[in-house]
Amino acid sequence: MATPISLPPLPWAENALDPVISANTISFHYGKHHKTYVENLNKLIAGTEYADLPLEKIVSATAGKSDKSAIFNNAAQTWNHTFYWNSLRPNGGGEPPAALKQKIEAAFGSVDACKKELSATSVSQFGSGWGWLVADGSTLKIVKTANAETPFTQGLKPLLTLDVWEHAYYLDYQNKRAAHLDAVLDKLINWEFAAQNLG
Ligand code: MN
Picture 1: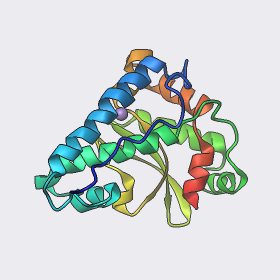
Picture 2: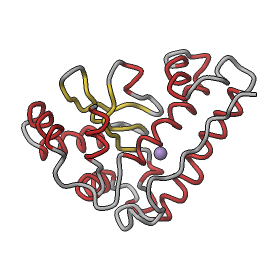
Picture 3: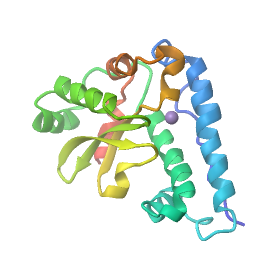
Picture 4: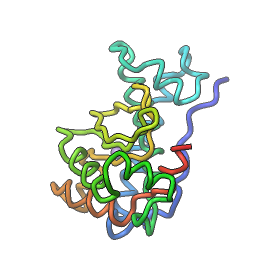
């Protein structure tokens, strides 16, 4: 029997990101939204050719296939959310580790300019989606994706992500997506995780 895809534990306590992201938001976002993507995915892949694949392979194998969109959406949302939790940490923000900082300065001019572009690009995602810092070969870029789309299916290496679905901020910030993102970038963003992903 195939091993189901699991919901990984959060890397911090539910209230650890408060007050920027409240325990209430995390409780719904992780405990309902993320959990439901995992449950739906396991139902959808049961008994199919995808049942034995690791999560990344399921995402890659279904990307761009209109007849597999339900599996893709739930698989990619499962992956994106785990990546998102790790992109955040209590007492985040501040200065990136030296090797990452150098790459950021080469691509954007400064850490501040990188944060501004990441925020602006994420704010500009119409409807639901994600903002990302990615490596494209040896250079860094900011990209946005719609709905469940994820950059690793496009040959880009994700370094960190921001969830701009309304469920990520509506309980705490209502319609103020930009205010939420700026607070996250200043206080919660996990540059160490991004540096690890740089490899
Ligand atoms: Mn989300």
